[in-house]
Length: 334
Length: 90
Image 1: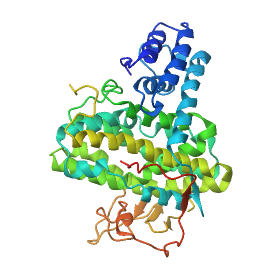
Image 2 (image 1 turned 120 degrees about the vertical axis):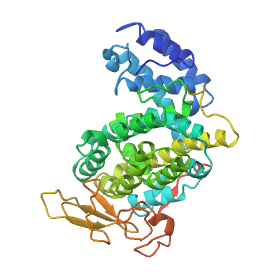
Image 3 (image 1 turned 90 degrees about the horizontal axis):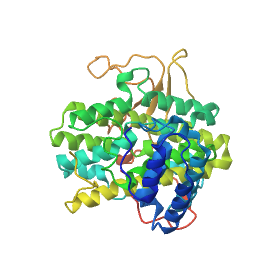
Image 4 (image 1 turned 45 degrees about the horizontal axis):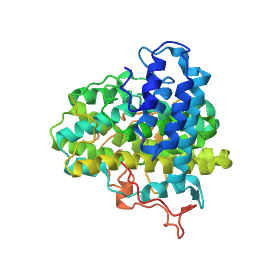
């Protein structure tokens, strides 16, 4: 992706160093990051820190244009990333109550998502949203959905037996089941084009609010740390378990607004796919993992609760802006 | 639930309070006897009758409170401290 614009001192220095070539000095980045963490009101909504973390994580995915690939494993950069991650995880643990299963983990997961009943963006799209608001939502989804499923795939080599088999079964479907044109990220790219939006990764990197990066970084944090393999599994379960009904509402809203099948296809696909994935993720994946590794059962539930909390803030935040007639973006779409 | 690859006989697994998960090769026909092609290797058949995409599941069983087992008398999950103010899912 193109390197986005800086959002503060940390990303200003980070971007300058990353684009200066391999092994540029990083001392000032570490000091600035430490100061920014100390000064931040809320790491979970901090534009500068969340974008910085996103850019460092992006080196492990598609990379950044004009940035040397060797930065991915530069120990000095990893040390800066760890400082942000430590505060990020601490803030998450303060913001999200740790759930505990009274009987079994899959039953607890179903209870968690059932009890999560805040105002939903999908219901707003179904009945009230304008076409421009829908385009803003799609732009906000690009950061994750153009690489849909990737952060959860980090967990594959860290699981074993039934849990691994279940994760691969879900991910194979996410990746089109052998049909490249049915890759969910590819279907979403078609939806973007159908809605008149740019489908290149990062095209709206300067538009989206910090909470979009927080949501993406949550998945990367859980996915890239083997220690948090339970949390990435719980995240996937919660994500899949809160998808099929909202996607039906999205599809209905998009049809109401006159968007074509090329745009609704993505949401229609997820109504059916995620009704399957929900069962596989809660029972075969999360349930099996909790049986096999009971010591990480609480991590599974924490990951699920964090998914609901962080994505709830993101999408609920968009709805709040829309309800008062404002844009959810930092600058208007072209 | 246990997985079965297509090299094995098709399997149908019932999910508590939810759909039937189908794995493996089998032919599926609608009310008119027309063949229905699933869009994926593993698919879920509606069991509650409320799905808008029958014969497949769309998650509607949750909306209609479909149950295959008696509801438990005690909560399935507790929290270490009061849950944060409700944070909505998408």
